[in-house]
Length: 339
Image (tube, helix red, strand yellow):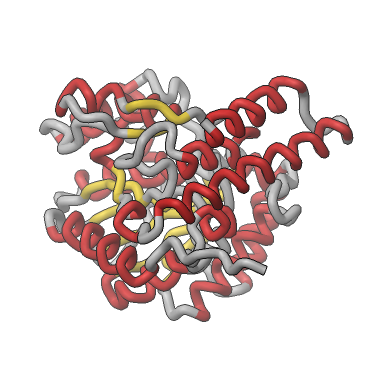
């Protein structure tokens, strides 16, 4: 049986990614770093990048030592709806508790859990009690009327100002959650608002794994990301803001491209100065490409992942769990990967 080639160097990636994070943090007094994707057990990345350690992000946080601490976000509506992760079938509450336990094992400080868009949800109150009994601090952030268009409300005491401030001691605050839609982005902007009110410099950046900005749109690794997020309807695209500013092709995805103008306008309203990022790609910290040591192995593994995702969609279609539109997108991903 042929052994799969190693395609990824974790140590090279760790060195480059941590250096970029420290460089960003050094420019400001505080860096709020949103973690996109899975913080631990990133099995999709491990399948697409042979040799990738599924817990390399935990190792990275551990390497930052006393410079970083963690804030976890969970959307109150997901608690109320008993939302399950599609990959593991576990609830978002269970995933939050697992993350807290993992942080303790890796000696990474957890500052607390933010229950986002909280509007009196009884199940969210019950989960907060579970957390507090474990000694975990709980904070509440609330729905903002008119978000994201009503800037006068958003950047005011009735908007971000109404949300709890989360005290922190370390220069890097990692903001993550048990799944997409947890409120990480809004939590980071809330904290920038509070830090600015209190006269402190702070900044925002996003820790990214996929899509890989400095690889082609058609690279199977980027296509495999689309295949992995079919239920979210994510779509890779050339970052138009990056192209307009730098005349450089960079790959991003629809949600970040759509969120960037919101960040830029809110940043300038809060900080009273130009946003330091000219594109959503500028916001990201992503050095995955530097860890790839065998592009052929990565391409082949990513193609296999696209086929694997297609098999899952076919099974879901037979079970009545998805429609033909998702099948069409899965087939498109396979075609692009095989290109």
